Amino acid sequence: MKITELIKYLEQIAPKSFQESYDNCGLIIGDANKEISSVLIALDCTEDIINEAIQRKCDLVITHHPLVFSGLNRFSGNSYTEKTVVKAIKNDIAVYAIHTNLDNIIDGVNSKIAQKLGLQNCKILDPKTGILKKLVSFVPTQHLEKVKLSIFDAGAGQIGNYDQCSFNVDGIGTFRANEKSKPFAGEIGSIHNENETRFEVIFPNYLQSKIISALLSSHPYEEVAYDIYSLDNSHNKVGAGIIGDLSHEFTSTEFLKHLKSSLDISVIKFTPFENTIKKVAICGGAGGFLLKNAIYQKADVFVSSDFKYHDFFDANQQIMIADIGHYESEKHSIELLNELILKKFPTFAVLKTETVTNPIKYYY
Ligand SMILES: [Zn+2]
Image (cartoon, rainbow, N blue to C red; front, side, top):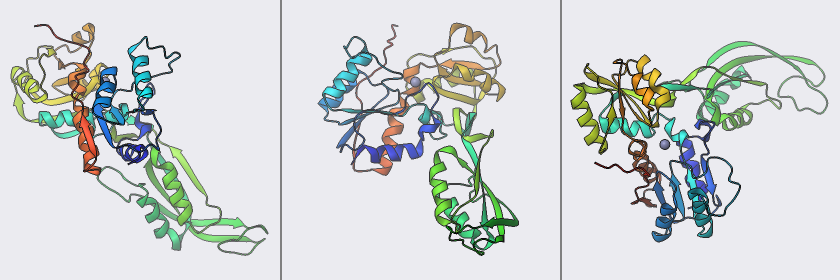
């Protein structure tokens, strides 16, 4: 298999346009057209992970955290990043990251954590804006069904649990063809009126080129009139964090025990909470920025990591903060990626790392 086939599949699930502005998802080292025989999955890309890839004969390393976030200006091997980049290149190992794009989908890392905690009715905690667009086009009415089906097939018109959503209104389109044209209807040089239907559909931004090609190839006109609008609506299946319900109410101590055993955690930092716990908000990795959303959506507990000392005061008996550690919250991305790849390529050699990359140790 070529690297590009695997990337294409992963980015259909977690499109790169879903990543945050500071991120650097995608193929960081290597040639996308290279044939690969096995892949190693890890949370972080460290020198130890590259060593493991060499030892276990993997040509590609897929990690959640990108090895490089921004430009490197020297490769002398002084920092762990430089050392890792140099080692990967010298050993012809490709490196790929799927980070905030995987965090921002409803079936991503947070969903994996929610599944382990047994949460139900899960939805995105902070739905993302800037993803949805609207396409408006004008089609001769007799050709409308064909054009719409082609656009729906390309992925437009999905709203929640509904597909093939569109709005249609009939009207008259006008045009005058010049000598160089081959008009679908009317005479060259004369103004023509055609019964057309204006139709509107929404679509996520990453499908734009596919949807425009579907429109152009199915529309009968030589020159197709269409408009694309960016929408301010949020996408209810894309965004940060997740929120869902436990099957029953837990006391705070019962919940902490449940959290510890379900996610295999050795230590939890938390703020005491007097009420029972039923609604749980989750954000794998550093999630302090979502505390207000978790409180607003009436979560009883917010499970995340990397809270600062003063953040814990903000819990203020409105919510319990449970800080389970960055590595501990995101190590589940390894299992998630392993499952995703094997679902599509069941016979491909996918190896989960045996290296613990957590730079933090606990002393009891
Ligand atoms: Zn992280």
